[in-house]
Length: 196
Image (cartoon, rainbow, N blue to C red; front, side, top):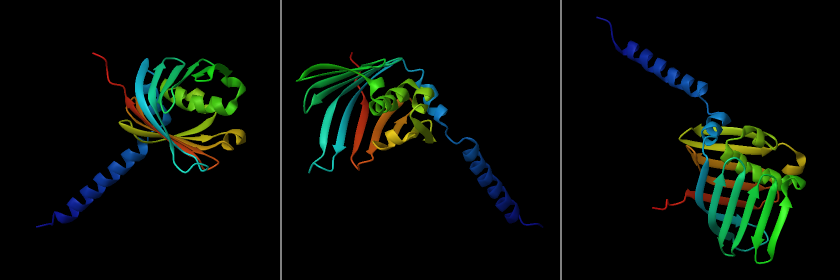
């Protein structure tokens, strides 16, 4: 009578190799994250952003809401510590605060444009918008993903060393911005409660 033990060991090895091969074949690509996001027409969320600045003894925390409407409208309303509103439509950034209202063409400010597109391009699921400024790498799986954005130009790299965006399915949950100066910010994002 022959032993079944060697056969079971071979079966286990084949199963392990098949799983490993499946992981390699199905490695997450940026398109796997961005394509589902490209179908979201609008999203509303709340945020808490914590900025760690070397010159300050304590982090700066801002709270408020984010509103996105396809294809290129993004609004951030900061409720605390100081009320302000930032609205981006196309290539124009409008800032409203205690000092009044200012309009800025983001195309005149490449670093600002890149930071805007890191968020707006991800929300829009637009690989071309992200690819203008960053090398984009994806990891994780569709249900829990991570995009790592590395600046393409020296000018941008002098301001930002890396942006990491994490989410689940079509919801962004966290944005980490690591500045070249050593300062950094972490924004935690949650879907806004639906109104009845």
